[in-house]
Length: 107
Image (tube, rainbow, N blue to C red; front, side):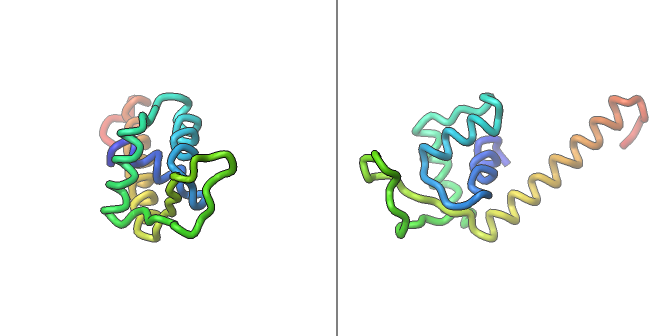
């Protein structure tokens, strides 16, 4: 899974949110390593919707002070499963790397 998709799904794990808030949350979650410029952010959100991992939430009110164009997104059960699977995969990679770096040979 691409890094930007992982961090967007992770951001959405706390509940529905809108694009620019996801953008800020991803920057915070990644300690500034992942910056989602608008084209990448909205392209990624639409990719996640097309995969069935996010859904649009048209029933949410736009945030106060906004232009009213913000779209809310919500993590689907399939998206949560994809996030859990990717997290498990990365844990396995980290475990193998720690084992190898400790000089323990094959993982």
